[in-house]
Length: 366
Image (cartoon, rainbow, N blue to C red; front, side):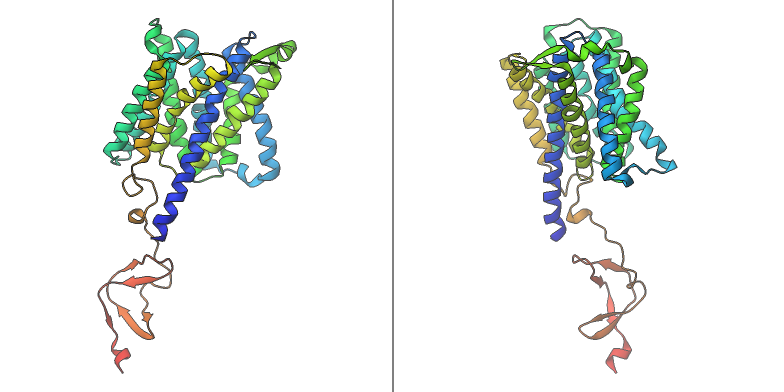
């Protein structure tokens, strides 16, 4: 019972962290849009964003948690995969997509990632997901279509569609590799190294040092306020990059990856709401209905209990190791020694061991 009671707060905390992560990711949309109105290209904004985030986070982690930056040679492929796919690949391919196809269509293509994650868990890992999870994914995906309003502009480009699907694949890699890495390493160190690798990848396409210096002092309009571009980029690096990546990895330590993927569909909803508040872009009835459908789908997925969703720690999924003193040795119960001829199994209370089909030793009777 203690394990079940402990699993509920862990899952609630992980759900809150994952939701906070995608709310912060959504804030990057209005911030980047405000900077691009001053003449910045999407690739330049992404390059400066990742480079600034890496420059801010790496020294902090090196001073406060130096052990978090220690990785073995066996972790090289994990770090490269997370940095190239989960950080640099997602950002770069998404901006390639929005440069060639409507933004709404690109957002819908990227929202395919939760379904890809669920398919990976089902097919590759061989884990059955509850029907409620699939229903929630379908509802959330349909709601994101309404939020993006893909029917307003039908001009599609084959390369743009391919880039959008590539961003979805990279986003699925972010979840799967992030889950694998966050449960074995410190999320702060994994985020710092991932940002460095992603910044190097994007810098090859758009080197940040080639930008004119006067572009940083241009004025951007954000929510009726006139702010310099460098302050908007700083907020984009901290609130839109460092914090969401950190909170997302912390959430993946306790939240099943299939459930975390569905929460990612909150991003277009929050982005549309922030665009309405900060940029004056009004929300239509279809977008409001889509937002309600996305939230309904996310709630349905979260309703799947810890005992039914694989990966959530619950009483039925716990397997405690056999204590070293119990293997092949007699136990004492109420002062009388007992010999067990059969296997031991873990008791609900940690540290106690019960045996099955035990008999009292003949020595105990004398």
